[in-house]
Length: 496
Image (cartoon, rainbow, N blue to C red; front, top):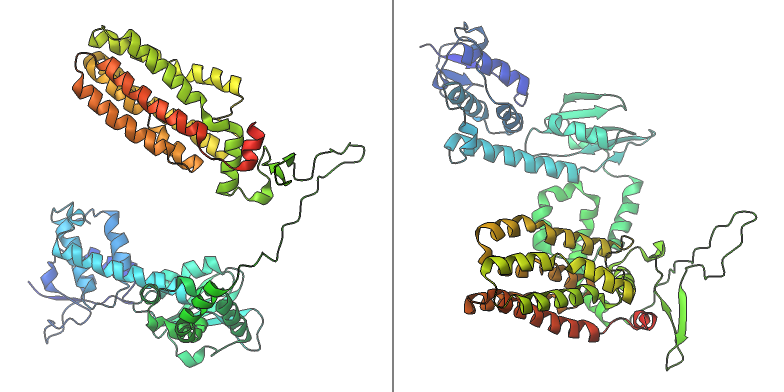
């Protein structure tokens, strides 16, 4: 078969390559019979153009993923990229429908490598392009950049969206693009001298960068990995990096030796807004409730019931509010202790199925009993006002979703129900431990899991009672820790 030549112009254009590839596939021309872009294998005689090849087959169906891959690969500078993509398209048309999903295939792997290289180059261009103001013009900027691959057309829409309100141009050695506020215009490449060398704003930017540079977080290896030195010539702040890196150690030592200073800026208290004719409240502006003085004569204040916006919902303030609302969160452990103790006592001589049924009914009463205890103690464990309270509520929902497991076990394997309920109903303790910043939940979960597993294996004739004893043990330990664990003084005073 005669050979054909194919030249993609411009080399990164997907439509140009797709037009040639479709012509070759419709003509049934194998990859080895096409010379792409002056391939070294080209014959000395002039070969006919691939577009002129007569079509003998209908256009094949290829997955859209191929064109997504091709759009990236075509931007690479590899001279074999056009032939590689046609070879993949040919194989798909010949019946390898799932070729792109075979990541171990040599052609697919090579195309993926080229696409990833283009992706990295695209990311670097988005990050490291720096515009400079054009002297003598208003709101006009030019940037010079040297990408590793031919990605200007691929990246230009990003800059049009990002800087839609200003007129700009990006120059590269191969290609240029300009934005006038309405449309992109592409042109030939330029030289670095075509872009301004500097502008007045860069001095201000360097000053700002030097002040926000944190020497304590310096990681030169990571810096060079994320910002390779070949891009430093495009960055005004890069001129400062050698000196900042050299002096980082000394600056860190000075920071460590410096005495702590109170913050200079204080957030003013918010004043309550009132309308004409409205009575003002006698409460303090920040709704902070003052409590009695302690032994040292210091007056403490209870955290506001609703976190003030000035507190910015910090974790510490949210935990303090949760503690003030939950009053040590004893209602659920007390309810669990009552139910599991009763179930263990009544289930001593029951069969596995009867014991499992008793436990299912009994554990369903934990939540109502807990709500009753909470009302008596004044707890608001599942309050929707505090995000941590909402998180605790979601944990209760999560635990109850496991009934989709408990019910089938009750029907088909009732001997497993004490174990599944014992473990499932204790999952929220790990999250509770994080909420209050205390290891009580971790200890409960570990003790409960180990004791339950041992009881289930060691007492096969009385599994319900044995597992109930294990859970009661975990509850007793946890309630003792929760009742005596230290909490913020202001919260404790309010709780009394």
